[in-house]
Every structure is written in C-alpha cells, then in structure tokens.
Image (cartoon, rainbow, N blue to C red; front, side, top):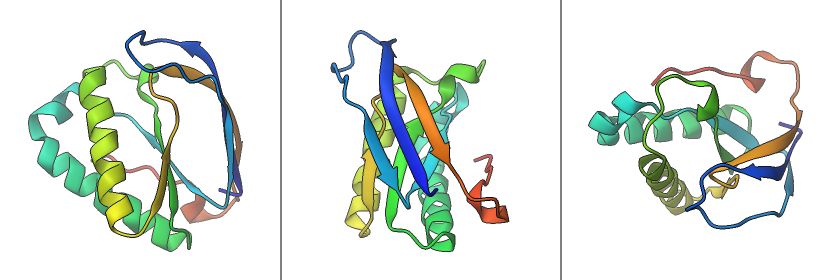
Length: 129
C-alpha cells in the first residue's frame, strides 16, 4: 500500500490495553486477517500458512514492512479473542526474527481506516488459509 493509517475509535474488548493513538504508514504491506473458530484446532498449520503467505506477498510488493490488522468483526465464525491476539503476537515475533518490520493495529478496537492501495493485481490479494 502506498499509505495505511488508523485511528482507534471504539474499544470493543475491555481486557485489551488502552490505545487511543493513531498511526500512519507508507509503502507497507497491510494484512487484513480474519481468524476463525476452526483455526484454533489447527494453530500450527494456520501459523505456517499465514507466515508463508505474508512473506510471499511482501516479497511480491517489494517491502519488508508488514502491518497485521484483525478483521474478524465481519465474520460469523470468530476465534476466541485471546487466541487471535496470541496468534498475531506469535506471527509478529516470527516475522521479526526473519528480518521484517512488523506493526499491529490496536487489537479489540474499531478503527477509522485510511487506505491508499495501487491498482495492480498484487496490490490486493485474498487467501483462504
């Protein structure tokens, strides 16, 4: 993406840390990730596939900076929030150890988003893991 910005608006999970700061990124790969209930039963395989896909798309878009964004509020099949946050933290750690710069949007919040994505085929990719 040429630009990805967020501003927290509504906290939806009270147990998550308070975070009212917004942030803006340029030339970043943003991953809108939905973790589903079935993913909890196959955490290792899901993590492996997610890492593979994130590294692949970041390489195709020539960036080493990835933003992880939880996008589960539109799904009927949501994983437990604690599981999802742990998965995100684990993926961030593994990517960082592989030389990536990784950020996460505040977990447990609705966010105002600003997205500027180029109009070519690999700018927006959907993967079902």
